[in-house]
Image (cartoon, rainbow, N blue to C red; front, side):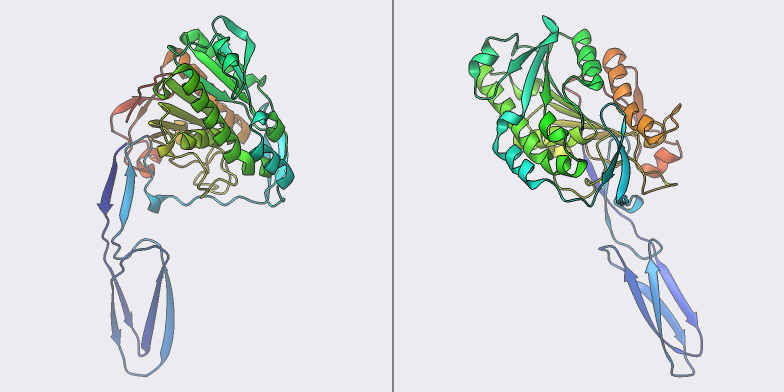
Length: 376
């Protein structure tokens, strides 16, 4: 991903023709250079404060980060959405759970998770055992060497969702798609103990779970010499941030991370969220982010977080869906189809305005799939 810098300069002349003395205060809520020319025609001494809330039409000298992915989002065109306190949020089975974003997390459970890596359980599936898992244990080399794990094959790591476990439907669907497409190792991380807690506690525990996964992959590498360049981490919703933290733990060495509509609540502005430096290539597929109509609503984070970011159908409302849950789940449904058929193609946009107007004319690029050497 290349990052380009652009200077945007717009001149504003403010003219006040009045028999008054005018003091003009201009408040600009961006870190920019502002030039304002004020013409004042005065006959009488009167002090008037004019508070101008300037959003755009000013002389602005600003650096804009342009993501050359699908879709680029310059900072002036997007404001991260605030979330209301109570939300109806789906678990991994699509069942609505009411969450309170202001609740205090369970610090006792978080401390236990952070200090006991055994709370992360790892199950291996291969074409030799596509439905019967083999348990891999951290710091137990024999559990790996005695299994069907083959370091010469690609390794796909899947993380199950909130309020679920490794047997959740999405894991089965994505696991089967990868095993049908290629002879690979599929490892499913089970973090059920923390995932069964409330959303706030689970969110607070994401870094610890992700770091534990990263350490396990480092152990796997040390035992089998399976290269990080053969590893692809896949996470949906909250779990996209888990695989991001695993990538951070490994210094961004894994070949690829795919975030399927990464969770938004509690993650806007969160430094522990998935980002482009977490792997050699990071892809975001956004299907339920905030919309221009209702910028505070959306289960997904809805902003560029990766090397390339795809916003199917605008990234917030999916054909055939009447609910946010349906929009949210469409991310993994599209991903599964892309692994099988590799038929979903995006077109590069310079910014979100181009995307929303459907006038993107950049190069085409496949969304999803199982390609470990994708780059943008």
